[in-house]
Length: 124
Image (cartoon, rainbow, N blue to C red; front, side):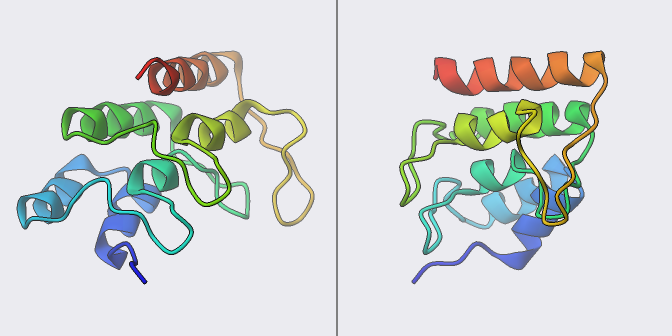
């Protein structure tokens, strides 16, 4: 069973910090490693958490661009057949609810950035 390093998931999913991620990739970690559910760090970075919290769309975009530059493959599927774009789609899906039944409240500018992220992930 593979797991994604805690340091990497924190750097990507909580801090949106490409430089912290780079240190881990520089140490030889394969950016396309899949965990036991088949999820990659790219999928993690574009997924709202179970509480509906997200990083700034600008931060998510910079991280996605960074991961793609480092060779992240957006076409990898998890064990349920989801790709990174499918996870990112949750950000803009008005039917998505967090663990408490709330949906994300995003402004027009945020939605435009997230739509661009989805397009970027789908075109690869």
